[in-house]
Image (cartoon, rainbow, N blue to C red):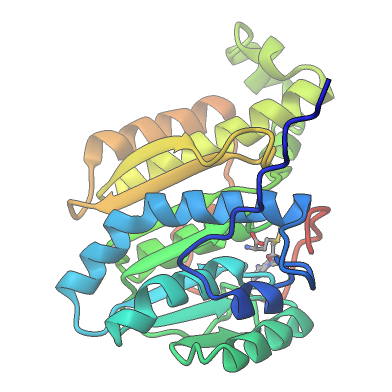
Amino acid sequence: MKKPARRPPERPPDFPPSLLHALHLLTRDGALNADARRKLKQIEHLLTLLTPAVTDVLARFGDPQIVDAGAGKAYLGLMLAQKWLRGAEKGRLFAIESRADLAARAESIAREAGLDRVTFVPTTIEAAPLPERLHLVCALHACDTATDEALALAIRRGADHVAVVPCCQAEVARQLAAQGPGDRARIEAVTPLYRHAWHRREFGAHLTNVIRALTLEAHGYQITVTELAGWEHSLKNELILGRRVHRESRPARARLEQLLDTFGVRPTLVRLLETPHETTDETPECPNSP
Ligand SMILES: C[S@@+](CC[C@H](N)C(=O)[O-])C[C@H]1O[C@@H](n2cnc3c(N)ncnc32)[C@H](O)[C@@H]1O
């Protein structure tokens, strides 16, 4: 039987081939390889889901300040700047990346592509010198507690919108493993949810994201939790979108405190927001780092 003809590679219309080449998303002969296709799928989905947030901040603010936290090669930040800031001729995107080599490489790509609305900040999210007021904070697969740093940054700087796709998460699983016998006896009915190490990792990651969403709600954000792209494109696929609509929500804060007390955990986001802002140079190891 004759094989059906291969579909020509889909090149996203919003991005010039020169930028896709520089980001190594296009091969020399202009095709998309499987990895590039997967990465592009994620970024394009995220950009689509970010459209209301970006158009809102562009419409409401003269010079919106946007962050790509844990930027890596800055696919997200560069493509966002290309898609929206270039044409709008306003706004600034800060790409924060703790690995100086990655930040330097992405900076030279931005310069070549003429994306002069992007500023690279080669340090940790906690240590990054940024404007006092931010309008949109995004973090795509920022490793482990770097997602918490991004959320704390958004909350502290009053960001109108926030979008995170969390990466691997091990901190809360460790805290669950360290529960004392008293804690375990008190919540005996639910401890089978995380008795085995594998379940503890999955449940710990889930609990972390629930705590993240509730923390945003407690700080006045309206939350949507959804899927970024199909599982075939990424295993870390949960997208938490927040839009700031109030100053705070006391019911959400009460639910958050109750959840933290029940499980006896205190993830980084909660600790960061309890303490005065300090800087750190520690970068957690992440197996998904580029
Ligand atoms: C899994 S990669 C994702 C990169 C990019 N957002 C993407 O989706 O292609 C996570 C990146 O976050 C960076 N990172 C980890 N902890 C960080 C921190 N605390 N502050 C800034 N960057 C951090 C890592 O060096 C790595 O480049």
